[in-house]
Length: 78
Image (cartoon, rainbow, N blue to C red; front, side):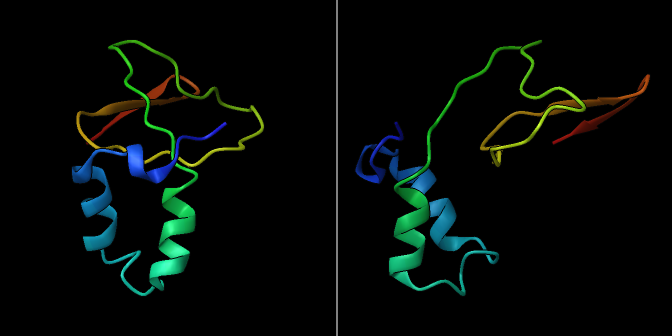
């Protein structure tokens, strides 16, 4: 189950409130999104999603960088 938004760190809540993509949402709509967020800390080398798998999640990178590998090509995204 997802964590209630009240348990989200203030920095994450603020980032969503201040981001242009979410700025057009009503407070009620934004709260619905925040109530479904789960925060994960991942380590270097952890696999988040594998090419070809059915996606059921949306990922927001709060800090750090990720490496995307597709058919032997690679891109570092920050």
